[in-house]
Length: 423
Image 1 (tube, rainbow, N blue to C red):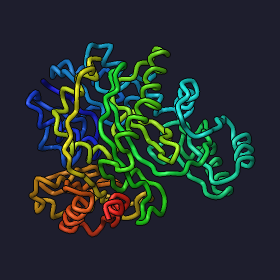
Image 2 (image 1 turned 180 degrees about the vertical axis):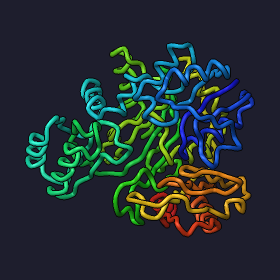
Image 3 (image 1 turned 90 degrees about the vertical axis):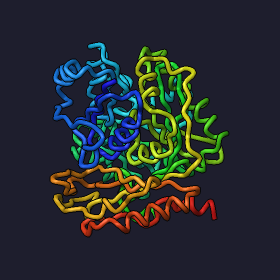
């Protein structure tokens, strides 16, 4: 079959890498891809906000499945437009994508279905939000209600920091995403992520991971889109995974179906695990980046039939097989990220990494005449497999050391929590 993959990041490179392994694939088209995906499919220049143009391309190239990587086209309703045209899409409808597109929408689902989550308040003006924060005190969490490219959340340890975050939201720092604000109780415990493939009725567990959001070693500094990740997440035991499914995800699927908004696609549950069990921090409606990279490294099953089953609504009875290996990815970012950074620096040494236990997934790169240049903040995800967390970590950092890119940097402690557990 012909497949169209939409997206340009490391997540999409990992998906392209896995989709390209499927014997069911005829041609993979990628809109628009990056410097690492050119050998996996045909790059196409599509303006994905122009739904008619995407639909026309699918007709011209006999596309049987569209896989939407990032969240923005889903919140924009691309899945609805293509589905209406009779094209199978892996990704939720615009209404269902509100699980990521609106923090308040998700909180309302949690309230209705008695899903364990942080206590919260929802505000449409700064004055009421500030009064709520002063009453509750710090630490506390301030979230822009809408999509803010992973930068709309402030974990405020001090009251002044929380008040400043509220002002940032309502003063336009995150555009329309900050027009409404959700203020949440500060949860303690250990964060982890669990993924589910969904067809509107069935939720198939699809791996666990833990990521590192802070830019600096020791989980210090500002939040980023993710500086590394590993899978599986040891904190999510089999028993805990079952609780996540029964207490959080299945009620969400039921609640969405009852509201006539069935959820199809991948549901990414960000969780806090404490002595009482799992609590939902937030939902995303697409694979995480860089969590997708470690999941794809461990997935033994053919990905394409699973994606198509979600799109067709016949996931029941499907299974996903996983390697027992551990996978770990280290993100290499441009100096200055998550602040201002320069583009255009040359990356060398990638051709020296000839090992089937290592994959370098590109994010912010471009390729020209076999020269790879950096074009974004998060640029590479150097990913390795191993029999243990420590072995995967060692292999990943050995690979990082072979990459010649003075303008880049990475954390030196990705996977520290899992390695410490092993020790």
